[in-house]
Image 1 (cartoon, rainbow, N blue to C red):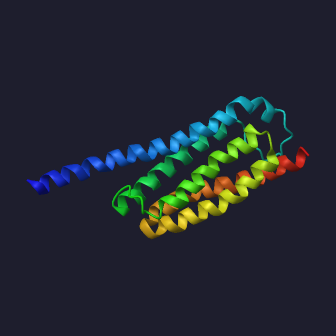
Image 2 (cartoon, helix red, strand yellow; image 1 turned 90 degrees about the vertical axis):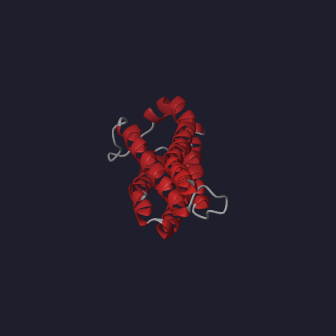
Image 3 (cartoon, rainbow, N blue to C red; image 1 turned 135 degrees about the vertical axis):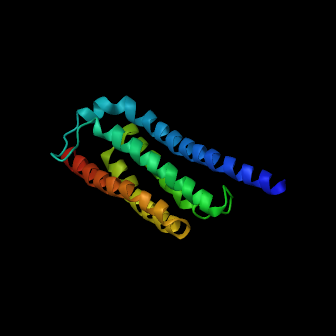
Length: 167
């Protein structure tokens, strides 16, 4: 009976951990939107390079990327045996998530492309660090962050171009 109960608890833990991972990632997304949404008119008035995507692309891409982050986090937590305080994979993930939100407040909230660039310059190595640590636990989880890294690298180039065009 103990084996059956332990199996049931593990079966329940996995969907619950997935839900927690999604909540963590999408709460961060929502926090970033608090700085972004009120400043969309400011952003619309900025000079932008020709490689700027249409405005509708950003929420679509970010939704996919936050979902991938959540699943990657869940896979690492599951591979690590749960949400344990000593799980070293959670530190770089938390740092990159914090920097992701901080970028929205620097770029949009403070209306500062220079400040946004300073944050995104820290975000890129934080994502790489997260991927390296995740790779030790679950290779697929690390690769799930690759589109995020590519998008943020592109966003860094876009951020730098907007900064240059609006000095």
